[in-house]
Image 1 (cartoon, one colour):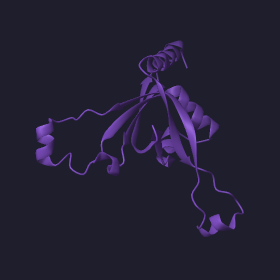
Image 2 (cartoon, rainbow, N blue to C red):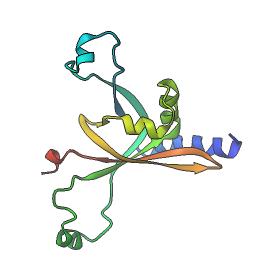
Image 3 (cartoon, rainbow, N blue to C red):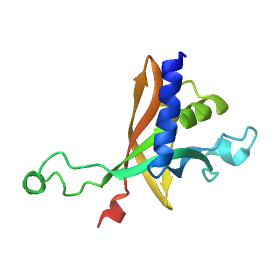
Length: 150
């Protein structure tokens, strides 16, 4: 990593903290317990572990079309509200390394969801912003549960 990308990473972390950086929890399935009869038979209740992601900025995704056009095309009906999480690449990289995931894509693919203010949201997509080949910011698009959108 060159000093330009290291500076971008520090700047992104500082900016995320400065604009209301908060803490969310990434919910991942707990590792299986070897030798457990209930788990081998598939009757054990699934277990989850929560891991802290911070600093994070949480905001609602803006609609890409005018509200009237969205209502006419049915784009809003039956669709959960989308939110965006801007996450420090430093925090995500620490999780990938400490949990021995092969990549960030696998980490977010395996995640059960993101817990934001007691609401579990599904991860729809994860993308990166990079400088000189080094990621400095992760953008997660998450979806609120449909039951909460009424």
